[in-house]
Length: 92
Length: 153
Image (cartoon, rainbow over all chains, first blue to last red; front, side, top):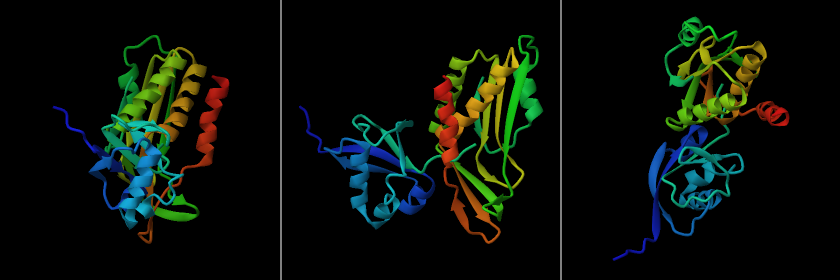
């Protein structure tokens, strides 16, 4: 018997000022099916509350990684376990 | 060969000795050490905090090192990056590139730093004397620095 799942469980991590603005370092979320890309996920996250709207207001600046590899906004998130959002990196 | 992320300080000569002792194939060792500047935008800073993405940081540094090894026949290489709270004057990052001849070692060390700065998931937050903290913005010049490696491939 197969059960149709309406959601996809994802671990989402936030770093630096994205973490401070969302008020959390990570969370497990059930993402509705139909959210296909990183950009779709950002659009959906922004609907989850004012802190997300604020954190992702400069979404053109925010970078993403899928399963610990840098990813573009157009990258597909199907089969991802872990997605991270963060500002441009400033190490070195 | 190797990458490390740590809160502890590093000792340049001990790190180089660990890489090169007993090796006679090496003719050139280039090292770069990045340190915390005591001011930002004309204002003194009291503290620099480095946040990172555990797991991805090590993976990304290893990918940067692998790209350098694919471009130059290095005899040895090392990246050590500190995280946590640092003070002005403290060490932040160490890059070592060793090869038979100097130009490869100079180029590989510069490449490792340029790639690390644009790829490795570290974020710096500076706290001033007034306790106000602000996140350091990425520099456009870092993107320009990485671009030169694709044109000279």
